[in-house]
Length: 138
Image (cartoon, rainbow, N blue to C red; front, side, top):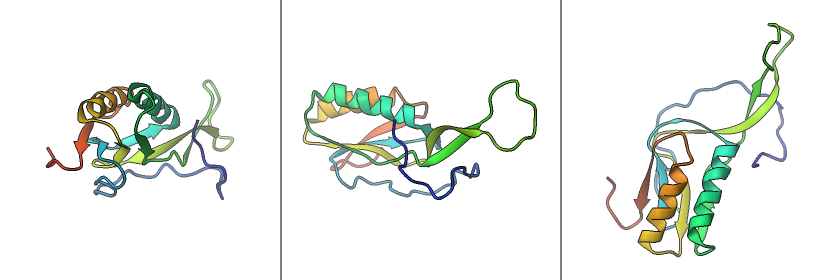
């Protein structure tokens, strides 16, 4: 699983997702997977999508993962009484805004890219859309 090697503070506040179009254009690859909905993605979900993407590419092309799970999400065990502080870190997550690019690929044909990116988007709990560098946005 992806997680940061170092954080100054072990636990974080919940935070808000916000609005805006940060990192909404392709920077590295020719095809990409763009989030339509905002929310939180866990490290497990990102890894499952990356594995599906790699499996369908048949070890061709290049993949860039554009989001990194750097937010610690804490949780207390079930049936524990209230109080006694904040729970331990349960998993790592990343916040995505509508329009964020999640994955970019290059070095493959359009139909292989479409098939592999759609299979990766099925692993994610948020709606995503496949985008192309040389085509107008939908």
